[in-house]
Image (tube, rainbow, N blue to C red; front, side, top):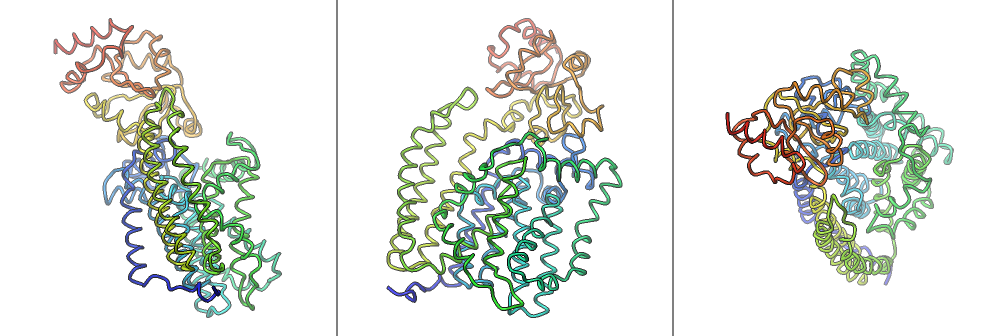
Length: 592
């Protein structure tokens, strides 16, 4: 079989558009399936909710406290979604979903322009079906937005620097590159300009193409960059003089250069994340990287796009590996570049080159299906083994979908039909990952406060004191649709509390004094902290009790007819040891 026989036709334009439409419907259609879970999902949903509630679109707040850890772009986008579509879970995830989806289409477009139609389709297929991109594309976190704009800046730069680019095309694409860097900077800070800048420096040193710097349209680009990125930074600094030191010095430098934020990890922290995140395409990555490095540079003016993609990926990976602050999602910006490299390799690899890798994927799927029968062993007091067992069944179905895709892909690859092989594996993996991601609701529901808030709805009244004691669950204010008063806890709110100490209660003793004088108060806490609160000798009634959370009310106050009806249905065991206050509560309800 010759290399030419590998050039089987891509699906028709209509078929590709249909695949793109189905991807869009499924990708966006599942955004609201799962409850929001702490920490990121609740935090970023709530900051945007408070932005709408207060009307202040300059100073971000979390539970009423100033919150300057991240810039404002995603908060704005989510707040707009709330204003247009209302408050809800899918609206909270809409920005993440849209930026993840659009990056797939951008990979398709840029790959086609840089490396040909097949590389563009294959690169998009890889990105749309790898574990990390699908997973984080449906979680409300800032990393997808910044990864999308960083990918935009990278791809726009490569399109601008093509050897055959016209002066007008080069100018416009470089303007787009500068704009994308500005939006990345508004998404998560200085990495929006640092990552593209360091990639450019490293490429220049390796290629000795010093003339490249003359093709960046620096003057117009800097005007675009600062025109988009600077206004909010200026406004928030004018209104909040403490912003600069906390955001730029502490958050942008100290966190990466020192272990101040207690997010440590060994130098190989991101290695397993990268390996697992590239599944099911991990097997093509070494050959794709080698091919990218060996591709010759085009005649000037032009850049070796494959080398730029590789330098980008390696630099970001090494940067975060060397950082003192590590979280799994930090390396997300490398995945669009790696997907494009994989797409180029898949378009150029010889016939039947992927058969062994597809066979390994199929074998791995079989092993995974068997291993998932033991997932119930991960159960604990908070999330019982039965829930892990149920989730394992869904995961087995997800793996089965990937297995079907791998088997069908192997048959086409064996016959030298690369295009259907890649697309079938991508479809099977994407559907499987979608099932796995959404089925996580079985476990995630135990961590979210959505059910807790629904259970205590009869006790809720406008303006009543609501305390969160010795803890702060980021999803609670979002589902309550209001802020809370934090008791004996700081955590990520520490900086805001230092500026607004009157919004908190620093000690349990202070909470006790408020509790006995408040009208219709409620308090939320971890189940493990209930004994400490009982030891204060306060009048209290447990109105919601889960393995993770407890909510208490005053038994000697009337929360209304709905609360009295709900109170009669509560399990007596919740208040065992507190029979006296239970009797007081029921008497109070009967005499009003």
